[in-house]
Amino acid sequence: MAKKPVVVIGLGEMGSVFARGLLRLGHPVYPVNRDANIKKLAKQLPNPKLVLIAVAENDLPRVLETIPKPWRNRLALLQNELLPDDYKAFDDVTVISVWFEKKKGQDSKIIIPSPVYGPRAQLLTDALATLNITTKVIERSHDMLNELVVKNLYILTSNIAGLRTGGTVGELWSDHQIFAQQVANEVIKLQEGLTGSRFNNHTLINTMLDAFNGDPVHQCMGRSAPTRLARALEHADRLGLELPTLRAIAADQAAGIHT
Image (cartoon, rainbow, N blue to C red):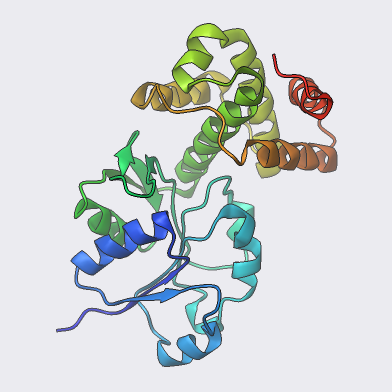
């Protein structure tokens, strides 16, 4: 019997990985790119097994606004900087915190197993398993919140600290540990403000270090680092948070200072 189709919105490097795994499971995959008529496709496919949104985090709010009603309870999200408030308007959302890297012309590079939560968690786990990409299924929403915060901590700490230090995540921790801890503690404070939760800084930082150790030569600063810092400070302003280390880094960037 034919398996249900899957819709993938955004077929970049990451979306293509998931599409390939889902195809290997036998699901027909229907890609949705920027010029696609999403409402027309939803009429043709009113009952897909999954609608995976694989666009960049900056595009996620716009894409979520366009999701047709028949698809709204079939979503899966994989963006960085993702928190439950981002998808609170939708029911039965599946979320994966992606801990593998996919660059053009290269195989996927696994850092640590990727946590996945929600009603279609097993489907994503099975799809990625066909590509030898490891995952772990999370059973409770509170545990998935911790997983999302850890990923945000890793991304924001390495990117924002890297604006000052450059280098790799291994070098960041071995050569600039006090500074990295200051950045990490402020990122956790920001995550607490964004989620209305409290976290154990020591536990979160130790989990982040597991990821550092999983790929110590990973470069700290990607192209998105300045945008991530600006967005973090916008959130801090809205929440009334000081974050002096992050603001000092931003001031250095504005002045063209790189130490």
